Length: 176
Image: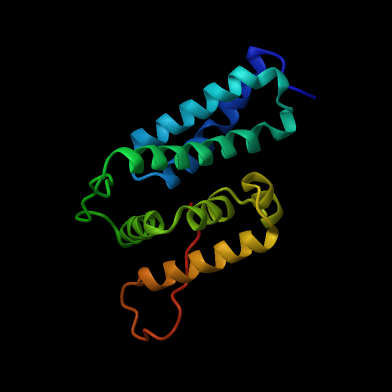
């Protein structure tokens, strides 16, 4: 069944908007870029809504957000050199769990795009490897390889507070 009405699109956005924004936020270094990516993806989806199958709409918008992030990166890299821009966050007055989340998010943003997208889809949006492969248009082996490399890099970058044995791998906590 394809989406046919404005009401269906509004219901789709109401149901999936927060998750789509979280996905876009995980791919970018700041909230305004995430909002722009989501808005562009939803605008594109709205224009094509009558031809998008309802059961594929979420994958379509997620793919559009991921592609929009790549396009943004390419546009910027071909015109200007930017420093790494990240929301300024003070670690003072935060509990240990919040500090750990912020450190994990910063490490996630340092990952290459492919690894970051796979980890966000897998752990933030609870997608299976098959769903991720379909969304990104890559093989299952590619998904697993990107996830393995991304987790390995995160384990190397994020240290648990009070960890004594540096040779033991750092457990990666669920992104939620």
